[in-house]
Length: 64
Image 1 (cartoon, rainbow, N blue to C red):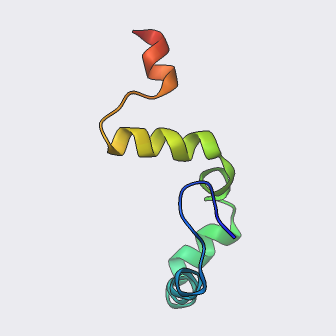
Image 2: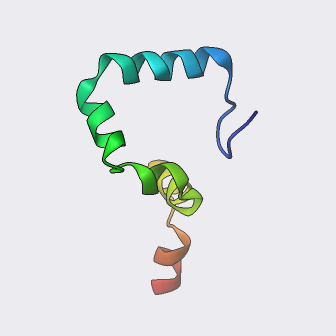
């Protein structure tokens, strides 16, 4: 299965689970729902990617 930006393969899932298992602070934040928007908001993911490559987001372009 693929997400919008990266392929989801067993090695990536395994690595992510290892980080989750070994990081109690991350588990606590996930349990409190602190990452829910970042995980589910595709527009936020695209805006973040655009900023990383030095492009304006659609909202920033509309202001100009």
